[in-house]
Length: 290
Length: 348
Image 1: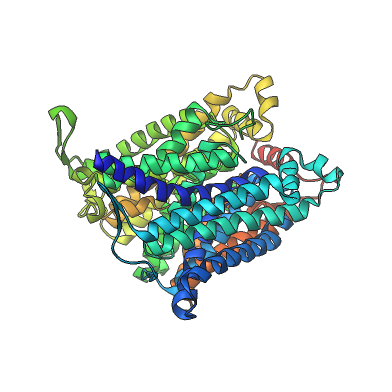
Image 2: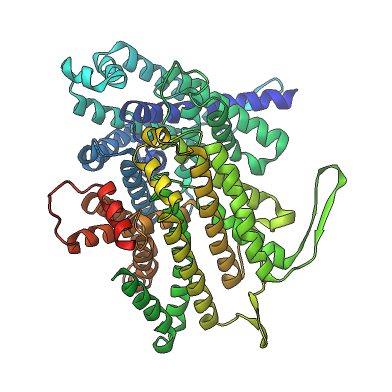
């Protein structure tokens, strides 16, 4: 029983960051209809920014987090402006392949600059975990969960309560009508991609210190983000949050009770199962697929 | 005209070992040839049915593992106390089994994944390849996991009246790969210009219209997936018996991307496209190696992929073909349809 409780605690910590990844990707995928292969590299990028700011610039750990989010925002905006804006209106396969090209170039760039040796970030949290009866959780992981929850709430408010969020939702529903109503669609696209990217960078900056940082860490993160988006349905933020926790639960239970080697297979199996049995996602309203 | 170019190209490739003595370059040519066969099979799906399968390396890897395990033998336990013990068979049987098993997997994946289109199809195919990779990594009893399958025997061909010939040298493997590549090219060429090929392209241009004129979508797409997977399996088998060691890294996503880059650069939906794109990207590392770090090479690949899509979105071969094509009577926007129509006429 206590083992199961421990899995649930781990699931909460993992699920929070997965939800961030998923929200970022569901915004981009849902609003822009871009299969964003650079999402994983933004996750890697966020983690490396954390490492650089803490270790090479000597900035406080808690200040480094907003810096990583801001850096992700800037990089996302740059990718959108240089690669996606000129391709607007071209078919989904072309943009997908361009994003694959960008992903390969950027990941190799990370490998070139920072090398393949995994790095770790020292944190200001005490080594001893917080023990609650039969389960224990490290302070760092608690902080990660709290920060992820805060970012999820901020994003939710941004999408549902602000004028920018309203314009984003309008663009998601009908781009042409939104444009007729005076929504600057180009600006919405750039903002969407930048926000989505900054969330991926935040997830990387939060999980990077928990594990280790290496250039390929984003590859699996990207696929997991796709799994979450497919689970939750396109452009569905609440779905992405729930999807993030479901994936985390599946991974924890899969690793705990099946085999730890197949932990990362859970995301893929979920993708295949959902697309075969309920391709609109578990929580989707009626939407088109493909 | 076209067949003259094709025959000249084959003769040129066949003459390479006569003047090229450098073993490193020969090795690069053989692996490039194997990847070109893979790229041609990918082109059948990507270029002629319009389905971007990013899990194509799964069929290549399955072919490699099936062929290697057939010729090495294995002994695995299954649930409920069953055991499968397999004694080594000749590699040429492995080659045939690789095609059959990869084709079967293509059938199953096609059956499941063609229920969705576009981005979803892409994601299902990626997921399939990753699951297969994780199985290859974790089913250590069968695949040796990360320790790799080693000492895979070379392919032996029985020659009538001459006894058995084991293809050990680079020269022999070069001609084997060339022969398989030529057969693949001819097979795909026949397919594309048949009724089935027109059905595939009809689906790519307009699925609704194709259905309305009586084309069976699922049957056509699944058959294309089976043939494509079978060819990829053959390429994987060649790879296993040439390299003679395979590990789960053969399933790496980057290998699919390499094939996709070859097809896109050369020109999807063009028969010669994967060959041209494959030669460029297969041999580029050889020339870049002395001047660039491997990471920088990959940055260049990413850049080239983006650049090609921006500058020559249809790829090198179709763009060149358009440039040298005879002027048409009426100037019209050249679409993929117009191009493929002319392609058919020239061949007929």
